[in-house]
Length: 331
Image (cartoon, rainbow, N blue to C red; front, side, top):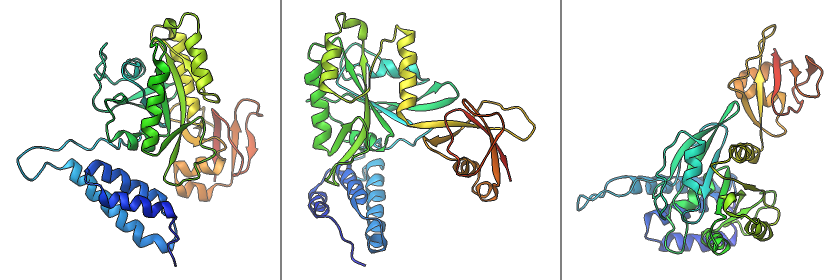
């Protein structure tokens, strides 16, 4: 079976072969793998590229064999934990670290000078009954762009672009962030319903945190931000405003487009802890499979409780659930 690779693949492959920086070579290899059509004709190509990716990761992570100097650890991939992973990006001093410090158990270095954050740091944010992983990252500017940033953004579920409303050069700095990402074929969009025509590019769902909102007394900068980013969700925040921070927590959860489903044993009360996490539109059968794949196969029907439903209503396996539904499985 022919591979049927797109023309852009061969262009990117030439870049990959010419590249010498191991981190950039890893990024290009991951893009090549993502671009490959997934069918039998590319099985060998996929296996070969996965092997190259593993080799590049090892090369980055291992100490150098000569001179005794150690290479920097690979930080372009952070395993996802909790209900979803959200990466915070932005210009210097935009407030990413202070947000992560306020929202999670992580303790990033929070300073009033630029470039205090030099490596990504993950922390878990609690929203009601779920944990969401937030990743603080180094700033993006004309002076700094860490090579691993592109992969952190690609691997995350959602991007939170943090903008400093106290900065009179706010739009210039944010435009530069977008330009640096686009140079690396990452596009920030309010949704990913439509992907770029060029398969070398990846669109990432993004919403915007208009931080230090109290510094924007007349609201002019938030208005300018809304005009620059039509269609994007923009959440004004301040770490001294509990209501604003709670609104951000809700927006972070909503951005993941997920629902929480609670389960109960027959004849027992429900305990609203450790919910099953499903995408919006998830079904009873999918919830059962999340618990155990065999459980999904044996499922006959379920009873549900929830807002706008009859208590104990009997439903079939293809019934679509909504956030905070309670399900009692019958096999």
